[in-house]
Amino acid sequence: MQTLRRVVCKLCASSSVSTQRIRQLSSVQEITEHSLAEDEEETGNHGNKKKKKMQRNRLLQRPDESVFASHGFPQFENMTKDEFAKHIADSQVYNHDGVIGLNKPAGIHVTGTSENQMNIVGVIPEVMEAVGKPAGEIAKAADRESSGLILLGETKEVTRKINDAFINARKRNQMVRKYWTVALGIPTPAEGTINIPIGPEQIGNQTLMVPKMDPSMGSFDRKETLRCKTDYKVLSANHHLNCSLIELQPLKLQKHQLQVHLTSKLCSILGDRTYSNRIQHILGVRLLVDPHHVTMGTQDIPDPIKTVLHLRTWHMSRLPLFLHWYQATLPKWTHTKDLIITAPPPPYFMEALQRLDLCNQTLEDRC
Image 1 (cartoon, rainbow, N blue to C red):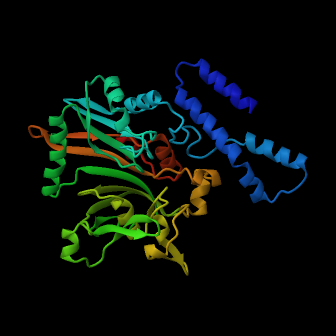
Image 2 (cartoon, rainbow, N blue to C red; image 1 turned 90 degrees about the vertical axis):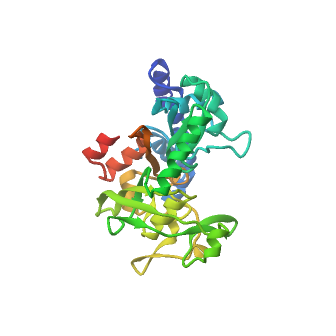
Image 3 (cartoon, helix red, strand yellow; image 1 turned 120 degrees about the vertical axis):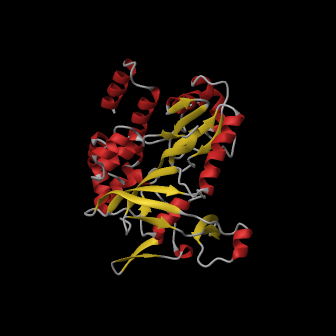
């Protein structure tokens, strides 16, 4: 603990280190302390107080070697509104001709469901002031679970133009979104199109999106079933660990479409606690299980991958979804020229690619 305090004090003395970085270091220590009871239970150590104290000291001194060690968990619950607004403003990746591009962290709501909930819309005025714009309105954004692009228009006219660009591209069957995901599993074939309609269904106390096989035309008219199309391509694969980096391009993105579609290929997104457990190993064969018969919760990550990423029990409940909206294309934005806006994946995402041997020079150059 004294060592941590010295590190924090040293960081405070450096003007190049942000308050957020110090908070992330502190949170790692807090999580480590929180996990001690679990670790003691796992070791089965019920010895005397001295032994337990020695074990506790060893655990506190053990460094966090996970993919989050250098960058902390993506958490913002302890931030003030001003700190949160500054973090979002600092994520700016594009700001020209009335179009603003931001890079959203995973797990952050775009719109809030309560006054106390941290969300993007709630800090738009502060963010726009920080990036030198009088106003801004969100046109498109990565959803709460995923990280990646938020596209805003400086005026209502620009916002409408961005939305029209997506609508017109869809009418031409043109893909304009590119997502990257770290997947448990390697789809076959390595490149293709998934055309599976999905729709909402009540499962337990939650409404989840499920594949709809042989839907009636009336179900489409009633919006009970939604047409979905996703192009996918394996960018790199580790056959030894059975994991991959996949590029996903949805035609029109529906809620949880990418999670459901990838699951249909017997692959799950790292960090997906909602749909991944539909994939079960039965007599050594990977099979899809009826969603009504699956318990949601901690993702079943193979031990070799947990070992490579140094994931422990206390990481699992906070593991973000490794799904990132990487690139957006606005076709013929200026005369005949397309506007391409790119948001690099979070540092922990790239660290995971390195450790899983899924990163090559081409991918690094694109980031």
